Length: 334
Length: 274
Image (cartoon, each protein chain N blue to C red):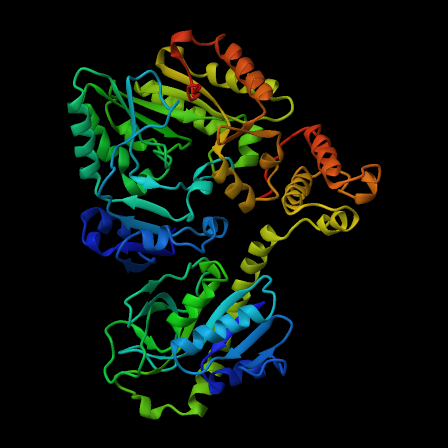
């Protein structure tokens, strides 16, 4: 429940603004000229705000569709991301958003139609190529569905664009809209996992591993293509057993026929973001691990990274064919 | 520490009595009062006076666990006289600049926008409180503290039905006195937030003990701080103690030894307690 909703004056009467506000009848409405006045200002604390985040409703004017970062892909020739929302109801301690943004308030850009047009234009520019659009880069794709109605609005767009693929990346069990919709071939619902003990320690507010698997099973039964994302892999002593258990738990319930892709990625954060995150949560064990700086990124020590990747890859190969596997690793630069 | 800024002595009076604040004779630029948890400064009228007083208070003593509260009276076109309103937006009328206090606490009273004007106005502005200090206070306080810990609470002193002619020092003191519960609730909510923020900024307790024993360059002091912080985050059974490192001759060797020790520790997550 949001106590305060900030609204850009320009979208005060937008139908989506009105319907979102109707969900929070007790919230104080505060009008602003531009969301940056609240979201980007100096002198705010992400950790304090995370305790009671405000909602900001805004209009996105440009850069609606962006090139996905290096290493962020699942086999497509061209990868893009778009963010109808910034920030997330979950509170994962490794999430780079808490190091990137000054504010923990949630922004919803209500002009979905402009995002959709931008996606259509991008797809039309490359009619003979398979394009991937990632929606869960700056937020969880499904976690705020009851408020945003994001999938309800965007699935029809992708349904009419055969060369454009959508990845919904999530840890959420808000799948009602998906279960009410006919599955589409060019959409993958990708769930992120860490082993339960790590999830409980670091992924605050996230549904349990079991709950997420239950949601995946329902989606599988309904015919949706599924993705599994082990990104980031988080180290703890005895990680081998924990990840082994997690894979067993997942693949005993999920059919490989419904799995579109599986990806692995190591914990990696731009140095400035990592420092911000560690300063916000100095008592956090995650940041007390054995890290090193590698080309401006903070990562686990290389040997440890390789050990984790090799182990998890070998384990996954017992369950899935190689063709479903993708490594979320930026290409080595000379 | 909660820092309270009021414009007038009559706004401060009820607070001084209620919180048993003692006059601080060290300062002669402003009248200041304090107890162990609160500091109050009387700024005088106007946003520049409020900004100067805020800066003066911030600079006059190290600010630990500080939150900032601007208290006073304001006009409003139709809100009843005596009603407390918590500002959710502060607008400087002269520059049209807006400030947005970060509302993490649950305000114990209704909220409203607050417009700060440079000179008293004859007519009320639509749907906003009007005062003469808040924008100066906020602009200054936000240099020293995070927006979640800077707020303004105003008691409505006049409206279209009750003009400013009725305002006397006595009524102003009574307005504040009648709303002490609300003020108290805000202060009580701000204190733990301020402590929480301060805790994340505190250097590890052992830092100075290490620095007394060995010489560290500024860069090494920062390294040491981060290593000791890491030590605590690992929740090891044995806390860092300079006496365990007496074999090492200089700061550089200490840093290497601590890092090696920490790198050798296992990482094991437990279920979060919250």
